[in-house]
Length: 158
Image (cartoon, rainbow, N blue to C red; front, side):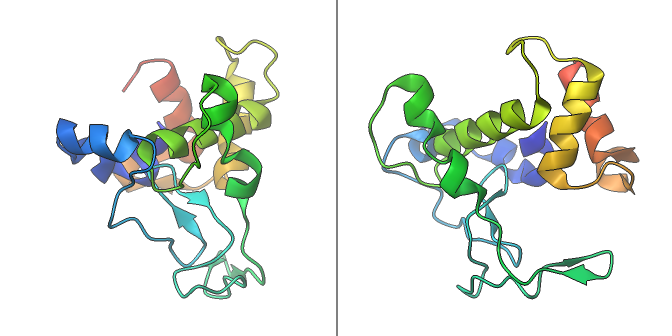
């Protein structure tokens, strides 16, 4: 659900490119951070924006702008190695590395004790902490809030 919201172009890649950009040491070449330091298929924040600045001063939402970039990659970027036993250097623009990092963050943010089955409250908690808001609806995701889209996807309704 997160990839469907954050970078739906991932699903339009040919199978050979997905395989290539998911292989350790390879990454999506056009992948760049945005003004909020988010990059990769799940838009994981990496601590510097599209200008190379750690301030993210152009990252504004609902009238508020950041004065420093968030770096969730620093916390969750090694999740692929933690959960698979691999030992490569993860890259935020590697599809597999990025998705493992996002999954670890979502699991942590959900507060769920069961790794397989989450309640609606846990899914909403993870979605809100991932995106920052669960009140605004978006036309591009069917006039749903971020959290409702994630919940519907989780429930196999999409």
